[in-house]
Structure formats: C-alpha cells, structure tokens
Image 1 (tube, helix red, strand yellow):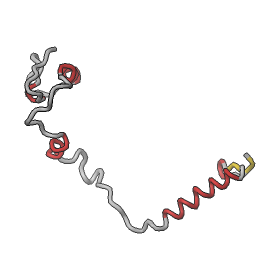
Image 2 (cartoon, helix red, strand yellow):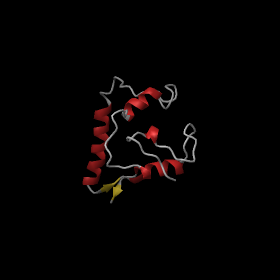
Image 3 (cartoon, helix red, strand yellow):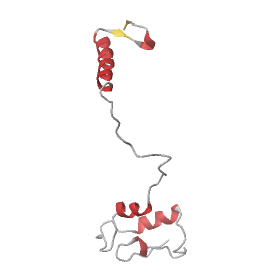
Image 4 (cartoon, one colour):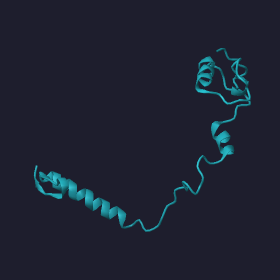
Length: 106
C-alpha cells in the first residue's frame, strides 16, 4: 500500500485506497510507518506530541483516577519500615529462617 509523503507531516501521509477522514486501522498505520523516512528532517509546522496530547485533555476522568497528592503525617512510616527491614536482615545474618512466621535455623 503506497503512501504519499510530503514535507514530513503525518497529515499529508494517506494511503491511496483509504478515506483520509476515516480512522486508520493497524495495517494502514504500519504501512505509513514503513513508508516514512526516519532520516528526513522534522517539518517546520510539526507540533510536539506533549502539546498535542495536552489539547485532548486527560485520558481518564479525575473521579476515576485522581492525581497523586502528598499527605502529611509520614514521620512514623520511615522508622517503622527501617525497623522491619532491619529485623529481617538481622534474622538472615544470624542464619535463621523466618518463613511463615516460624523462626528456625536455616
């Protein structure tokens, strides 16, 4: 399936037997990707993908996956994690095994 390549823009790349206004399937996208020249310089009017995706909005609604936020009160977590990890390391250094909560010689 030949593709028309003009000044490096994807908007100008359309397979000959496909409606340019319709959605592309995987075979058509593969043909376009294989027909593209990777060494060709980027067109002057090319838009960075981050700006293009920013215009589309979020992929998921905020009620489904809200942005991550930092919460206060994390002071107790670090010493607790360090103590648990240290206990397991000490158990291993002493040659003991703590599988399933039963302390025995390894």
